[in-house]
Length: 244
Image 1: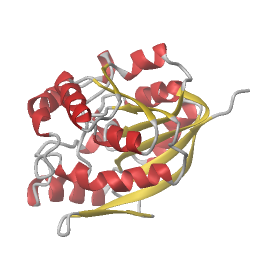
Image 2: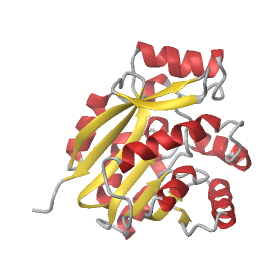
Image 3: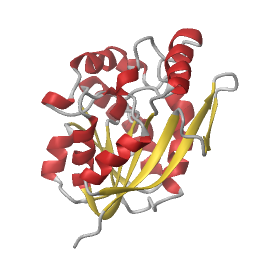
């Protein structure tokens, strides 16, 4: 199931309790057997979804809610120039140290998406926002800020959780209480996002959804794969409208 990255954005968009949770466990981010182990398993599938739909080599990419840098490093290895932001200082410190050890050049910042969108409006070819929207009080506003980062016809990639009985049983009951893949209280059912809601927010932000795909995690084999089933975990490829 989705494991969260640190909450991202100022004032009405940030959840301080969520942020504090990630500050406390940031030092364990790169332990594949720890609290973020599921993210390590999901990451190759997430990167494949992105790489099959846009060119990363030479692309300017913003990774919003980057956590300890798992996706940011993968994007960099794929040839992108990456700016990665998060509001959890400990996560950014962990990300910087790990990237240095891997000899990777990544522009890590403790910064809100609103601030980056104001500073760098319309400058990114690709924006990624993984496992973050379902943890925010005002996800619609964040989608709008993500859109502002994009060049005309640029691509936004989002991963999140659907809201229905099946996702409740798998992502909350199953993942948090039965298998304990993620800590209890990681997800709130009311904040999960139906694709129709994401599509509405996208339209308001001058975005269109090009494609949806499912992301399936097998807790027995600890493996992940892309599917067409978007009833639980899903990925979305959105595109910014071309300049008039």
